[in-house]
Amino acid sequence: MCEPYVNGNATAACGVAALMRVKLVRQEVLRLRIVVVAAHAMPLRLHPLPNVCLEPLSAHDAGLLLARALTLQRFDQAGQRQQLLRGKNLGLLCESEENEEAERFRRAATDLGAHVAHVRPHLSAASSRSDIADTGRMLGRLYDGIECLGLEATVVKRLAAAANVPVYDGIASRNHPTAKLAEQLAAEQSLDESHRFMVQAVLLSTLN
Image (cartoon, rainbow, N blue to C red):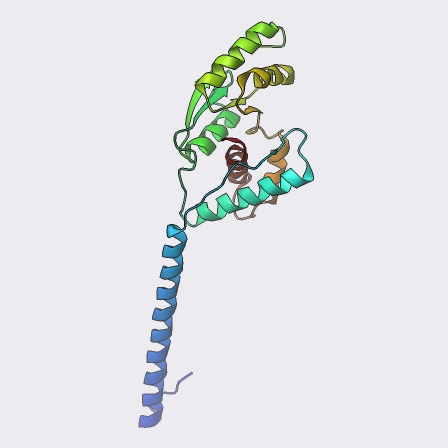
């Protein structure tokens, strides 16, 4: 703490110290600006992860998806959200697109630049195998990936077998195994936000 008005030397020394502090602060601000610009200039490239299996989800694959979600979270917090799924068309199979799970999937996908189309499935376990297979082949020609919400597991598996594109069994649902991983993301964000990053991690890890 400088003591002004004691003598001229003390006052001069205080002034020099103040100027030095200002200079240091300016240098620090400039350094932070350079870091931020560098972060914004750095492209984020996330390639599909080979052989990732969601069901059952192994500890190894869970670690890969969690690391990818953390990367997405950090870039988002830095204001560097990128259109990594631009040009991708995704199908959302569910009765209503206005529920929490459908909205979570839609936001996760569209934030990355994908287009999401709502499709009413009109399918159940009572549907014939041929009807499910025909639907799966049609959807596979229309979309790069398909999220199924509220469908029986057997129906989802048969759709996946015929679609020849990734078919997800409720990755936006709180009951999905990947949803538990969202709790391990940074605590400063809500669980819903963390879950969104997990959905994005799954999409980016499985879509070609």
